Image 1 (spheres, rainbow, N blue to C red):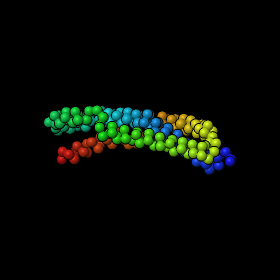
Image 2 (spheres, helix red, strand yellow; image 1 turned 120 degrees about the vertical axis):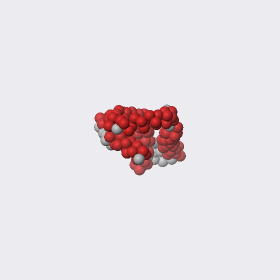
Image 3 (tube, rainbow, N blue to C red; image 1 turned 30 degrees about the vertical axis):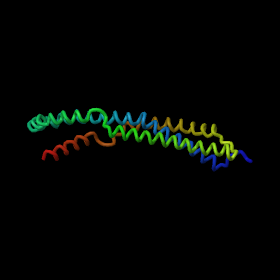
Image 4 (spheres, helix red, strand yellow; image 1 turned 120 degrees about the horizontal axis):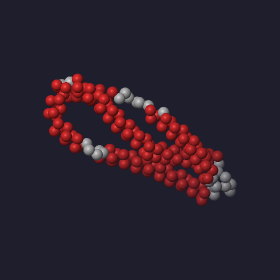
Length: 179
């Protein structure tokens, strides 16, 4: 029996390995790098908005704002205690997402391995795994370098919404609540 794989079978295995590597790389890149940068940017943005805008807003309406804040202080302290640490729902949701991503990677690996083992042992076909891995490694090294450069030099500097949007939203909600 011919031990060479048909071109379609080789391409199918190559695509499966490509998907496994791509999904694994993107998941790891997001969980280990992008999510941390995103969290830091969010905290920084909130701090900047509050520092810059809250003081000027309160100064303009000091006679009205100070008594209202003084009366609200016990509630603000209570609210502060309630929001210390990470939210349990967020922690559970993030764990579930990481679990699902890991499960998908393992499932894809199991599928790919079962196909290759079936081809090797049941069909007497030679699966050129080293060739497939070499092609995909070269591709992903180049793509990975380009993506890293893109995210660290371009995407990280992009401002999706103006910093004043949050302050405007807070002010409008406070106005709606107290009117």
